[in-house]
Image (spheres, each protein chain N blue to C red):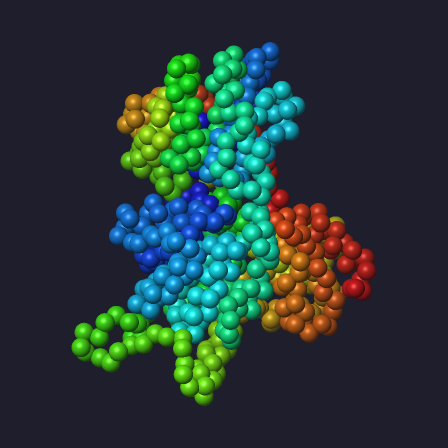
Length: 215
Length: 355
């Protein structure tokens, strides 16, 4: 799971992991947080939920501390060594973040059983159109050493997002899909909009937001 | 809605600066403000501007001094420890009457502290931070929209008064994402006949300098500068009042603390307690007037801060200690919860203003 920072990939990674675990009750599911760029809003915020659901969290021991280190998890190689385990990778928000992925990309490609998804949000200032989104996509691929296999449209304006905003973003998402030759795998929306948009957009996936702020 | 974008506070500052005509940015990475520099690094080369990651904060602020001397809109940004390093340059700019915008996205301190949000640079920014007699115009945004709007305002005020303006935000403001409208008016920079733009053999040399060899002249420069500050105090004080008119308990809070406090005020009102909020938007000049007025009917003031209590001194000065002023705070990177503030309001209500 990649995407420009603030695209919503961490939230989607958390939701997908919980969903995956439901489908594979007896299988091993893990989330690997390889974000070496952003010290905030980490998958570790959902640590308790993961342990309750029986999901393994592979994360740097310094995440969510005052130590702002671009460090990798000590159990990094479990991601590729344990081939029975389904892992959702949360990758940092730009080409520098994707360098972390480059470390294990050769093993992922060797195993050849993966999806590499790019999360896009047309309401973010650096990816408002097809050209700028393709630019970021190319940078991440080059740094990560692995090609994308699909797109996730997570276009949103935070709490103010309306159904119209999401519907209005489908043209952007389809254009990115066409220009990149990548399939639009799904469109993600906050769960409160799911019912309203159900049936109007293909492959709609509802998101439960990780954490409500106190302010 | 369609004209809005979803931005981090740090990005909003960077984009607003560009829209305000700032084509020169000098920075150095430090969490939690790094996105300002990252955004500038992406954008500036595309629009013919200058992004430069300096070798240190001290270098960056002196590059700001240079561009400001040449009369162009210029900005630097950092977080608390980095702002301490810039203190010398900020003082030099004050001594040379140079307009610029400095952004401080505060983190917990003192020292290297931590990367979580804080408001503990209030003293540093409102009382100076560098050496000598001077002030900065200090603006405290409380939303991502305000991060953008006050950035534009900061450039305008800096140019109008030939002084440094500072955006004093906190880590939360820098990192949080909210929808922003970037559709705002920008006043272009005024003529700057004092700028060092080359004489072209047409005029006398302009000199931008903070050194004075004659003490009598230096005294006069200080007097004149403080006449200017008096104008700023008169004209540029900004604040927001929320349910203050009949309030018995008045909260003083800025930035993220004001957002938390607003929730607490709403809850207190729902429970029948007359609470209100004064949110200073300019921390210097401090909005003395609304506090003085509220002191006529309030039984108690509560200063809510992400520090060990710094603005509380200005609240006491503004209210002339007529009613008790207490502190409700968290420190070291922690944020007060609405429940904590509500407890403080309830306690003040119960005690009826007895400290």
